[in-house]
Length: 306
Image (cartoon, rainbow, N blue to C red; front, side):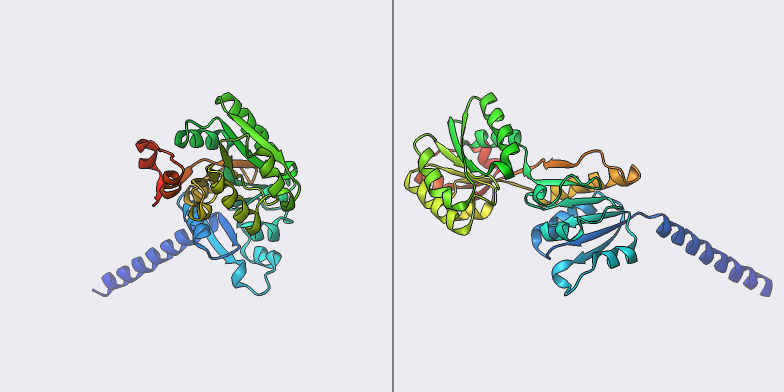
């Protein structure tokens, strides 16, 4: 009986030891991702959830707004990650100087204003491709033939080039007006108001401020011309519709990119990828006020503000 008990105890010890060794080995082998997040806000958390659903790694998260003084070098030295995920502009700005670890960013507006072609930085744009946006726009407003927009060539010039070509290939005209500061917005709008059927807001921080947004919305409501915006909040303020991105799917894309980089020994294949999933919000009150009828098939797949 004692011999059996001894064998049972020895077996139990060996089993526990093997479980410990296996678990320790897995932890050692697991790839580590340090998440540096600007703020604890819903879109960022949603994007991170999308990332986690795709990227199978050991994740440590640091939220900058929760830290009085954050030293990225110390955090990185302590965690020793194989990859860093930056969520938000502040996060990317804080860690962009790191050169020896791959960095993937997401939920950053105008990342080109922060990064300058660093070899270890890549990410997911917060804008959809011009082709995706024009196609989506024409699904909602197929009768539109002339669309106007304002932009700063230094910030969104490449996007506009793609949008002009896409519009031309789709049989419509994109009327553009260059500006260098928000002070030029009122006069630029007056220059194009009689040349367009609708106005397309693209994310360009040179163009839009609280003051110019208010002026623009009132200007086109008075002129009975619909506004296509990039943010749902502007639809609530009077734009006809928005074409925005899906944070969860952006997280999926970042997770796919991170997996590819980790599997490739830290090397990246691309610098930046456009967001791929469009989310449409339509303000039916504005549509009715402007006498615009929207196809039921479009309404069925859009979010509706009544």
